[in-house]
Length: 348
Image (cartoon, rainbow, N blue to C red; front, side):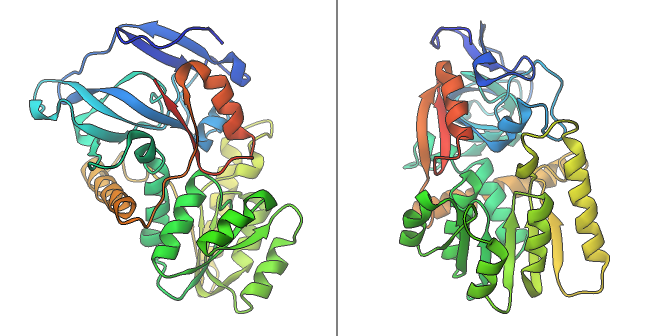
């Protein structure tokens, strides 16, 4: 990786040049980008390493751009400048934005319509942990599965970036939560009120059936493949499976799209069967292309709900580590290690 730190006077961004090891990521310096009409330039204060970027560096993220590009799924920062037609009063405001790519940079240009204000009292790193992870968890829990108080839910990867937020939101909704994680995370999960299951040493379906003989009301599954089959079989009548990835195929060779397409086909088939269960594939970007204004309104409203949950104490942001952009290789390796709880956050 090219050496060097960030510069207050210019742009610093991380470039993914191709299918490389973390040390192959490159730092690139340039001029701070200007905001065009309807846009804002954000001085990044925090971005993060999501599972999406882990897949992207392997060339296995569905719909990723061609190499080279700047990764970075979301960010939090201060509005540095505004373009034509944008309220100048936004300058200096701390905001959050989803970018899908481009967030691993000291300065990022986004459409003003895509920013969401971060409430006072929530720090940049704390807010960063609940942008894409919080929106994903909120929408899966409340818009898809529609979990209610008294129900039982199963959260795979309960110690992960999305999982940690999902667990807390489900508990705040009054649900009983069973969460899969390696043994090192079990004490922390128990302290929250989660019933932990060790996916490495236990037979997960057997253990969950012992805990919920009548089935669970919702399963949130990012693993895909055979795990999705088991998850579907664990549902109670009227239950919902929300699948949102294929983590089990992260290190496979070949097409990154094929496992997702296979998974979506399987979910479609299950929904076509005469049963009282539901299966969803969750895509946070659904609707953006054809109903952009409605998509933006939904994202803004749901992230505001997540920030409010942080302010109430329903969500405690889980920061696994904070590292500067210049240490991106170390940050990516830590995020991919499976040893941390929460999100690895990057700062400029």
